[in-house]
Every structure is written in C-alpha cells, then in structure tokens.
Amino acid sequence: MRLQGVSKRFADVVAVDDVTLDVHDGEFLTLLGPSGSGKTTVLRIVAGFENPTSGTVEIAGRDVTSDPPYLRDVNTVFQDYALFPHMSVSENVEYGLRVKGVDRGRRAAAAAKALATVELAGLGSRKPSQLSGGQRQRVALARALINEPRVLLLDEPLGALDLKLRRQMQLELKSIQRQFAITFIFVTHDQEEALTMSDRIAIFDAGRIVQLGSPQEIYEQPATSFVADFIGTTNTLTTQTGAAFCLRPERISVSATQPTAQVRMRAGHVTETSYLGATRTVLVQTDDGTKLTVSVPAQASTADITPGARVWCTWEDTAEFIIR
Image 1 (cartoon, helix red, strand yellow):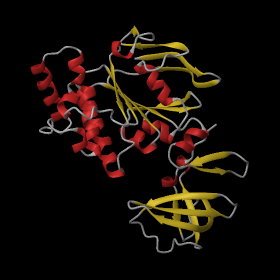
Image 2 (tube, one colour):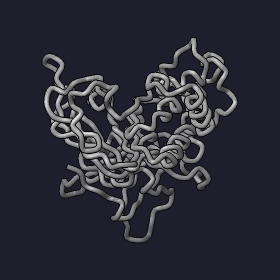
Image 3 (cartoon, helix red, strand yellow):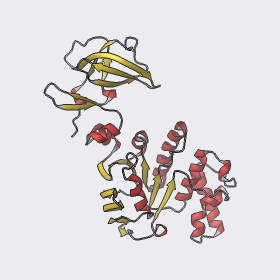
Image 4 (cartoon, one colour):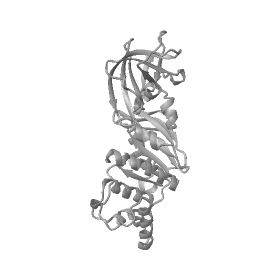
C-alpha cells in the first residue's frame, strides 16, 4: 500500500500535510502522535471515509483514491466497536459476508472459525450487551477479519479497555496479525502501545510524518526533540561547551557513593522518588540546576537514595544521543 503526497485541508486547517508513506505487505504499522497530529485523518483517507485534498492512495498497486469504502480491500475496527446491538455475536461477525451475498451455511462456518480465532468459540448466540469490553473488541476484530481484507485499519481500538486488559489485547492483536499475515495499520496516541506492537512506527506532528522506523530506532535514535520527548522520557543536558545531548532515564545509574573511576557524571541531591512496581523513579536536581529523571530496577538497593540525599548520577558515553 502507498500514500503519495497526501494532504487534507478542512477550510483553513491543514490536517494532513504532504504525507508519502509506503506500507509493507503483512507488516504491523502504527501511526502515532498526539491529538490533532493527523494520524486519524490519514487512516480515514485510507479507509475512504475522507477524500484527500491532494495526493493518491494505492492498495495492491491500484489507485483507489476516488473509490468508496466498500470498493477498497480494507476493513476498519473502531474504538467504540460499532457492533449491532440487536444482532447476535455470530450475526455481527458474518454481516460482511451477508452483504456480499454469501450463503447462510458458509457464513455460519466462517463466523464460527473467526470467533474461535479470537477465543470466543461458543459465544455466537449471545448479544453484544452480554459480553465484556474485551470480548466485544474481539467480536469487532473477528467481523473485520472474516472478509480477509488486504489491509486492516484499527482506530485506537483498545482505548476503552482498562490497563490490564489493554496490555493483554496488545499481545493478542500482534499474535493474530502474524497468524493472518494481514497488513495492520494501527492508530494510537499511546507510546507504550506502539512500542509493544509495531514492526514500524510513523510519528506524526502537525500533519506530517517526522520519523519512520522500528520501535528500537524510534526510541534509541529519535530524529527530533519532539520525537525524543513524545516517546518515553528524555533528559536533556548541556556540556561545558554548550553542546546539548540527551539521556534516557534507564541509562543512568544513581549512587550515594561518589565514583572513583573516570565516568560521565553529575552530582546533586534527590528531590523525589516513586515506586512503580518493576522500576523506581528517582528525580535528581544536579548542582548545575539540571533536573534528571532516573529509572532503576525496583529490586536495586536504594536505601540511601531518599529525598534530600546527596547522590552521583553516572552513565556511559554510548548512552548519549544528540537530536536536532
């Protein structure tokens, strides 16, 4: 799939600004960015719900820019599921095949298979109101997958779920995507979600893609200060010569004992600590006025790392990265 020079204007507002993007067959691509960055508008243009002001959309080498949604080989899963409340789960799942004129027996068999794939076998006779949020999300996914689209579009589909279920569904979605080998284009504003699930991530800001790469590339080699700040937490420091560089919190060590070896270092005092389960966050005010966020394993000894304590923050020079 390819977007070439796609722009979208709403009156004087430029929602999408000259986006060109090649999507690989069978990949899990996430469009990530803050609200209003253009990612959802791009998804709607791919789906055919919005027409671009300029540019083209190609799917499987065919220009579909002017095609209505039902003529595009895509399906969309929405955050609110969009299930028909008066229909059973099976009827919801097989609805797309029903519209295509597939006979009842084949529809029922395909729906049963799709429900089994999303671990909802045996629940086909229930109504959506009798299911949990996570189960309704699976029904919406099964309904989209039953048509075997070339591209599956997911518009913040996990946003309504609680944190524990959301993390479970992240892994399940990725597993299902690999099983079906369908191209997934996933929209979210959740950085952790994007890093967990994606083969590649396209970072959006002000209607443009400001960086495209693997989760590791995006996190460890952010192209701009916006990307560095948006993906995870970043510490920005300045050398004596005035050159700026950045450090991720987990790449910094903190100790109440002054190091004897020659290392990259800042001294200061602890202003706050917080326990986060697997990790502990330590906030440090350095002697030169810089505020550092340090992340250490929760099981690490931090008896001397308490608010007000004198500490030394150290790191390897390889942990530093420069952004423009």
